[in-house]
Image (cartoon, rainbow, N blue to C red; front, side, top):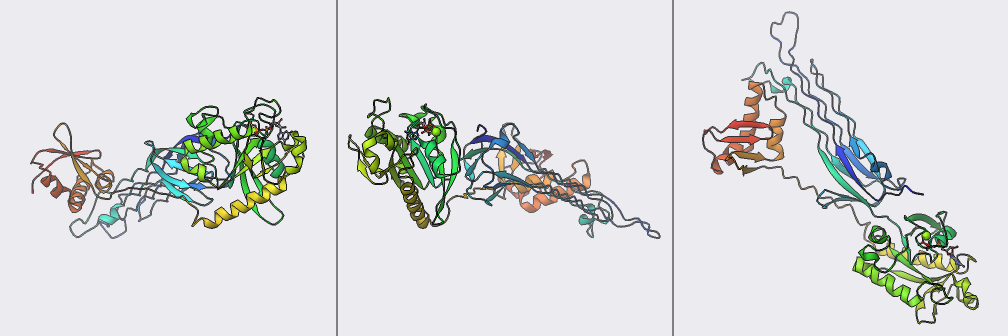
Amino acid sequence: MSGFVDECQLNVRGGDGGAGCVAFRREAHVAKGGPDGGDGGAGGSIWLVADRNVASLLAFKDHPHRRAPDGTHGQGKKKHGAGGDDLVVHVPEGTVVLDREGTVLADLVSTGDRWLAAAGGRGGKGNARFLSNRRRAPAFAEQGELGEEQWLNLELKLMADVALVGFPNVGKSTLISRISAARPKIADYPFTTLEPNLGVVRLDDGAEFIVADIPGLIEGASEGKGLGHRFLRHIERARVLVLLIDLAGGVTGTTAAAPAEQARVLLDELAAYQPDLAERPRLLVGSRVDLLGELDGAAGSAFTTEDGLTLDLCISSVTGAGLAHLTGRMADLVRAARATEVEPEGFIVHRPEAEGFRIEREDDGSYRVVGRQAERAVALSDLTNLDALDFAHSRLKKLGVDRALARAGAREGDIVRIGGLNFEYEED
Ligand SMILES: Nc1nc2c(ncn2[C@@H]2O[C@H](COP(=O)(O)OP(=O)(O)OP(=O)(O)O)[C@@H](O)[C@H]2O)c(=O)[nH]1
Ligand SMILES: [Mg+2]
């Protein structure tokens, strides 16, 4: 049952674009054929896609690198290189993608939600593309662009309709094993469950919902006590909470807290972790009602404990008393909660990608041009080829880089850096 991983890092790298080709036509009777070098193929991109068949982030734990294939180079006779295939990386439903600073980039809530994690590099243009009336025999082509690369943090927040919340050892796992096909470990000691279990509950009337059995909470969980914080986040997205209270607590001489005290602690911890969890639709359910022989008849209906806690109903996962009532009540609350949802929340995507550029002054007095298009113009160029350099400069000029440098105060002879290229500024 180990193998549940709900936090990991992932390194994604799109494929590099293939280089454009420099070639000239060779034909009988034609002394100087025109340029006919083909374009390089684009590199493959990496997509993260939510998939309900993936249970956890385990696959990334020891293998955090994913790489999409490169595009191939262009060839003569205007033959273009082949593109690299996109790589689809399957992640569990409820995976939140963050950058290294903790900013949320995407929230992949339900199966099919997809997010572009790393774009493949563009292929370079072949020399056939650089033919113009001034340049009859372009002897340069573009390099392929490098694929995007980044480190991501992935966090799984389980998507369940109902979360079972309670002190350790109150019977949460026993309950889920009675109402669904989930078969978690059950034992008579606290913290038997070390990772959440999901089970699907199907009722005769066709209702279907997912229940999560969460490791037990204790006082201080919201500050990290017990299994604490790590598992509270799996409660965050549940539509309905079932607070399971051990009726035997404080009554039969067990060490467990009395029912009202259990309820107080649970609600306090939920609210301390995230205030709106205390407002979530919930059922207060007494468990192990069979241990209080004379109250067995109360299973399935509301009643008040000796210490004054009013429960919605009581159950026994051993005798089965009250279970049908409980699943019916769960289904009603889940249905009501689903009905009020406008659309499944999630899928936030922030991709701030300014297409412009800016000029920065470096410590040594030089100027740096920062921005995707400007850097790309340089990255694609073969910097050892004079024609290609010329071409890159004219591209930068078109982007307005020259004017911006002048405005920033650049003088004849100042050093300007763009990506890997350094050159001297020339006034017009
Ligand atoms: N008599 C009785 N015993 C129960 C009932 N439900 C669970 N138990 C017993 O209580 C003990 C704890 O049950 P679990 O289901 O493992 O409890 P849990 O809440 O999942 O515990 P943790 O995973 O440690 O948080 C086991 O010995 C169960 O057999 C019940 O309705 N009646
Ligand atoms: Mg358990």
